[in-house]
Image (cartoon, rainbow, N blue to C red; front, side):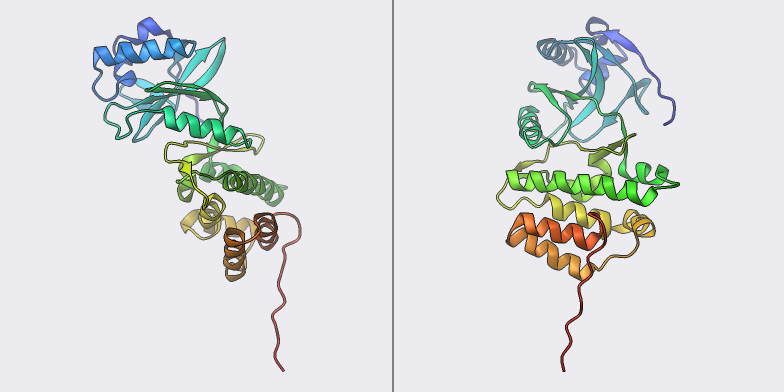
Length: 270
């Protein structure tokens, strides 16, 4: 990873420029800043560590999205990720996102939920790379095995979300919503668009991104080899409409992620 800039400050100092603009982005409204600081204190946040590859003005942050700015906080001596709601966000609260993350945690998915208020969501800080960057740097001996292991873990997480009726809603853009740690452990992030649905389609969305979409899927094919896409689509339909456990096994078998790739014999007519 590239070197990042860091600046650890107390919450009182965060109420002043240039940090105040981050806490009430994009306006920097003083009343809003004080409200966010109060909410952070209610979540036991002791300080902020402005650290990350992205910069807003002169301040380093972890991430910037349409709903919030992600920064590093310090609580009980440990670093956590804090999502701070943008003032111009179309979402009026982060509480629902926090609830979706808490539910995902119950099936061992997502960063660990640490608390939420209207404008601040606290969660486990994940140190990892985006999927494209991780794949680019996964090279050398054992490359194929490592990619298979990580992909299998991702798909299992998606299947657990599907079984729990939690639809992430954004896994067709997995490059923005999944980080992979140095040990190859994937973590699904950003549940702001998540909702409850009996027809949750996390597995289908992620498979489409990994194996059917654009440049990333082509890079995957160079590592894992070609797949039988027609058979995979049949397996995905079975997964969605029939037995999810058997359907998952079929999908994984066709992809060759659980060991030897499953190949169907073509039927012959005399």
